[in-house]
Image (spheres, rainbow, N blue to C red):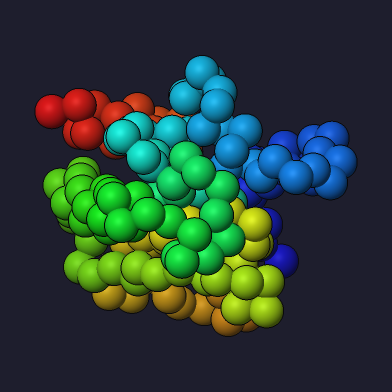
Length: 162
């Protein structure tokens, strides 16, 4: 039997869990100054982008508005436009830094739609490569993330700063 090592997962497993709160994880990150620790790659006027700490694929970014909203109707036109503009900018930076061959981009609104943080909508930008879905997710129920999240955070922050 071969072993798959995903050392970043133990942090999630052992970390103290936040008690239920009216304030979402994204709101806490939005109000924090710990951008590197929180894997924040860029901040704009009404929203910010960060790496997913437990990604579906390498380079999996999320864009969240600063305002905690569970549905698109709760955002102003300006916030909605900023969400889409930053999503497009994330796609451009990922193209430059990681050279993916495609993307999955979308929202999961509501817990029944798969939203893990249903109280605070966020856009997913997942870079894809031909052949990146192989036997690992099908047989082992695991994905392979090829680069340490902190290293990728630094690369993406530098690319956003250009």
